[in-house]
Length: 295
Figure 1 (cartoon, one colour):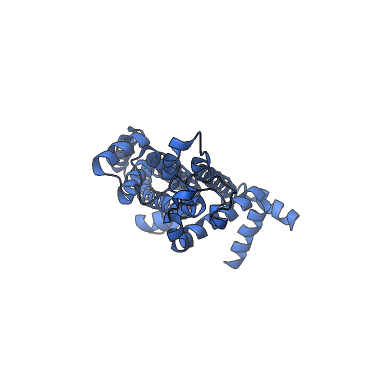
Figure 2: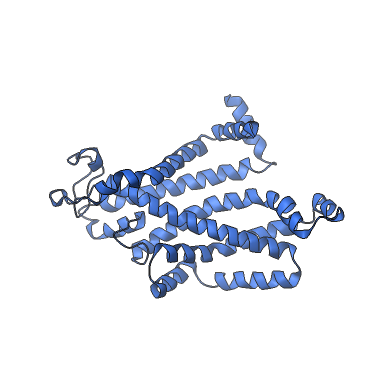
């Protein structure tokens, strides 16, 4: 286990862009976990004398380094507090969609053709609706809340994992080690979860990393439209929406949360690209050779 961890660290060190992305995401995760507990009071404290205060003025101390909003609340702690809600919604949607989509994809790829056709038609029904339009309709009817937002985003992303998993299973189930397990009398459940799933899992992890960025952008879009997270809760998308009326006079209200979204999405894409190579036995040697040279 330790040698495998050192191997992954060497491969990560070989790709400096992925290393920077991983460090940035680590900081984001840590801040999302502990930030709201430390800065929630500062994020909600109003000071009308500092309304729309420009960045780098330090009139509010170090918390005012990014400026203040229309109610004089410092933007830096608000961005950190909003980070938790944004990450929770994205993580929840990716978790549920990946679990449901992967399980359905495993069944569709290994079960009888009739069962596979029923599952694939279900995926076609979900994909026939544009994901954001479906989210808008459902949230308008059910009401905007964190749970509804997670559920509707998870449902719209299920076909991504379902189709990918099914395609991988259809290819893997014809390999010799699966045929050998079948001849040895292994049950279908054991073959699927013990022999096929470990081969498919690296691909699913790469897709989940990319999908996390997509879901985060979708949540920001819905919050920007006013049907996502509602005040007093905040997300990065809601902060951008609240600063929309002040774009010509206080651009920083929307700029800083927008920059946070861009950097997080970029880091997720860079890390997913590294994972695609690092988890592929055919291409892994590139990173391993780079790690040895740097070492």
